[in-house]
Length: 199
Image (tube, rainbow, N blue to C red; front, side, top):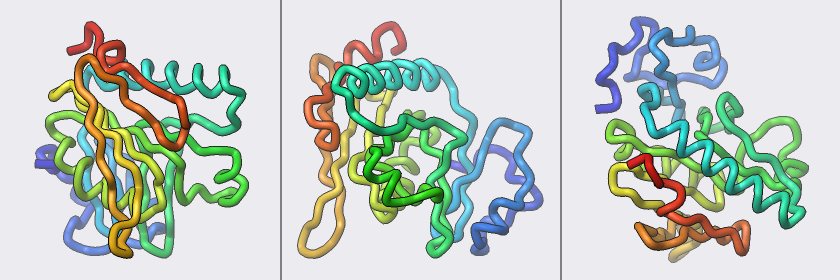
């Protein structure tokens, strides 16, 4: 389903790539882009509405909270990446929050983030919830917001340990409810307000 678009002739989806090989691939001309997960390439179709509007609303809500509470950190959008060469993985999340503390610890290479946001579509929903979410967990993302205009829900996942393994603990929020962050204690987002006039 993810590869409904015509795969590029230069890309071999069956083999593993290093980060350098991945970076050397030509850019697509159809608005789609590639993710790299443990050396394997996944094609992500271009975003459709209401993707950009959801992004704008979440950006505003997050920045307002950070400014009002004088919290250090950066709010980043594509083409800002998270990547690691040792487990060849590369993503450009729809939005991410990186605390000042984490930024200092990582230095110039962004290998993780505190919170990642993905705005889903029918075409990407399954991939974002499974393969991509698992990769984010492996990269040390502490919190993942999956914003779904099809079901009109936020799925907020928190990294936790269960019987010695890292797992996502999931909270779902729907109409009339507020999604809550644990990483940014006190930050709440209204499902109704985010989706108002968009779905």
